[in-house]
Amino acid sequence: MYTALATALVDWHRAARRPMPWRTPFPREPYGVLVAEVMAQQTQIDRVLPFWERFLARFPTLAALAAADESDVLEQWSGLGYYRRARMLRAAAKAIEARGEWPRTAESLRTLPGVGPYSAAAVAAFCFGGTEPPVDGNVARVAARFGRLALPLGSARLLAAGRRLAAALHAAAPSPEVFEALMELGGTLCAPAPPRCLLCPLRPGCEAAHHGDQDRYPLPRPQRAAEPHRWVVLWLERDDGQVLLREVQGPLLDRLWLPPLRILDACEQPASAAAGLAAGLGFAGSLRTAPTLSHGISHRAITVHPFVGSFEPGVSEATPDRRWADPLRPGLPTSSLLVKLARICRASSWEV
Image 1 (cartoon, rainbow, N blue to C red):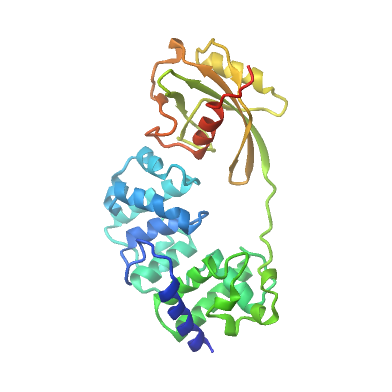
Image 2: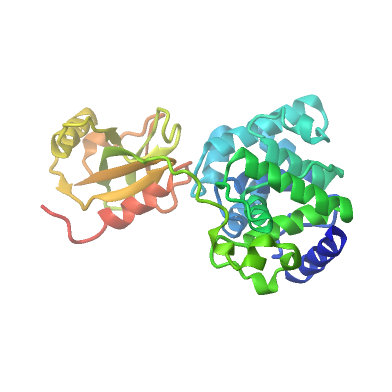
């Protein structure tokens, strides 16, 4: 059975795969593949493409990334989120440069900073002929439906089922393309909803498709309750459109550049906190209240209270952790929160 399924899967993949610049003929150059796989953690592959192209234009080689300043790497990553990935990718580049050659097995690739089992197996398979199956959420979803397995996405048992399915297909048609085709299948035809089973090359062997209940599998991933947070942000803007930014220090958004902000205590009022934050900056002008906005970071749900003020000479000095910059083209590592703030704070409907 698996020989026919693997052949059908590869044939489908060659006709329907999405073209991506790192999907060159096997074996592939590992640097571009590693960057793509790290970016694709927590991010859909279609959204990765422009960031990958921008990143590779700035850091075209492993050596260039290893030699780069962290701030430069974070700037090129801006907008993609989960900035720890960028720091770990740079650390991995440094580790590879220090050892003088690429690790060639999934086991040795897992020793690199930030490289987990899936990314290690993917790089090993696509670049060095490794046979350990790379199993991401897409492959796990295919496995759940193929075997009609009532298991939650992300569970160890479902990942193991994904490895067994990928290994069986690979044994029937030994090529890294089988692994990639299975991942592509899970990202397209076998997407969360609605699965397009009539077009699927694995349909003849799929238990869920046979029973017509493919929408039931896999079970939902257990959701972690979002932690509520409240922030106050000062939007101080000059006549030329530049906004005061500070380098954030702390576990959230560490070393990214945003308008001055403060995390509120449970009972703290936004207006009084904004006044204290402004006083610490030497800003004595009036502040206007902009509409609140919502922002998410990992499992945190943040309510942001922006306060808007105009330029005053007392806060104009640039320091190592304070800059004036165009919020839409800051030239600094920042967060997507900055664009959200620009949209809200530059609107005309503030309360005075």
